[in-house]
Length: 129
Image 1 (cartoon, rainbow, N blue to C red):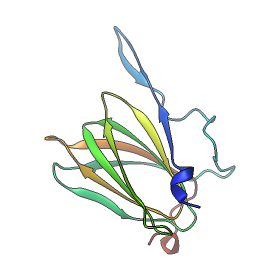
Image 2: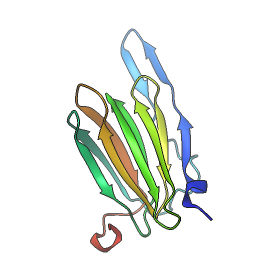
Image 3: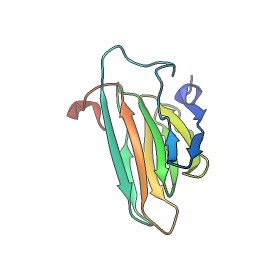
């Protein structure tokens, strides 16, 4: 079975008022969350640059773009299936990437992108291939 069956795209919405904008990234209802806290981190990518280019043996990650745009390129390392998802801060989504799916973030815009990520386990060097 393809690991792509376990990729989830969760629609998000900005809440805006006179004070500014609010975007809830994760609320705990997402499927597959670990009972142990992992890591939350931010990634920035310059125009034309590629980030990540790896996969995890055990960790799942959730990605939400905060500003700019990027192409998330995914490869199921078991089946070699390929998929790409366009991420844009104007239409926020959170993408869950399961273990054994290689992922790369390529800046597809003309300005830097910012992305918030959550991993369901702390960084462990042997888990990142």
